Length: 345
Ligand code: G4F
Image 1 (cartoon, rainbow, N blue to C red):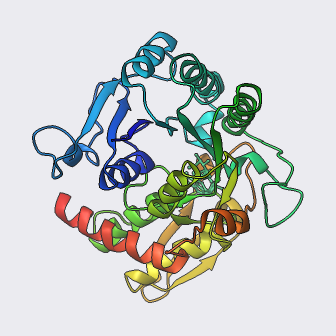
Image 2 (image 1 turned 180 degrees about the vertical axis):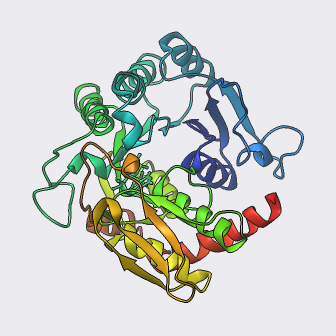
């Protein structure tokens, strides 16, 4: 039985990946950080006495900032595959916490790579790299050849991790891959990322629990895919003859504004826009009520206007295809949040 170790297992991607690997018969070990409140709702069904499947997820306490702990874990588990999904993953917050973001995202990756090199150099390593590496890119769409121009502390730290992954592959012959993942979302997305914030707030407005959505830069455009599709790509990257780096994206570009319009359309509200920039608002065309307000606190010191991926290499070499695109993604997230909000009421 193959053994996998996942850092960040309780996050959106980690929980989907754990499910995918358990379904493939892996023995799955997940690393969770000690926090004062438990945030394990998506992995709870996968471990302990309540696990649905006979093969269970085994959890270990760990932290990307704790070198000794990571080394002990790798030595104890001796995994065949390691998926490094742990991260301070919020780009906006990285401007407030640049040093912490660097420690976790950059040095944390180095600590893990080094532990694998010392205790199980045959293990295959996946690094969660990101479209944020491209920053305000020189060309569109972006491929594996596009120049990296990171423009946030988050992205600069991820750039270090990207090149360390390449470096361990080139220097020590380790099977180490980067997945250059464009934005990927789901009903499990953290509530302070823009897609989930919108679908959750619009669901609350539909149920009379909120009266408006407070938002930042609505003209930012992203290539949004569905997280379970991206997790499949991570696994495929570790099943090839040779390690390589891949862009994973849908190839569709949409704005935050379109996302908001689509989410409101789901609850039968047509929006009209009034004003510009910091005083712009979205008005319910049937009632005249303001249901979207721009709040400058959600603007970043520097933002990426647009990122669009070309996943031709992943399609060709991995046989990977996205199964869910933007319209379906917003629909499924709206449906899920309508249920979640109604149940929690
Ligand atoms: O949802 P976001 O916070 O995602 P962002 O910054 O693109 O990063 C995400 O995807 C990357 C690529 O996979 C990952 F590397 C990264 O870890 C993370 O998962 O913001 C998307 C856009 C931005 O332009 C932001 O300025 O939405 C804009 N936005 C507008 N109002 C907002 C808001 N973002 C957030 N989080 N909250 C707002 O109120």
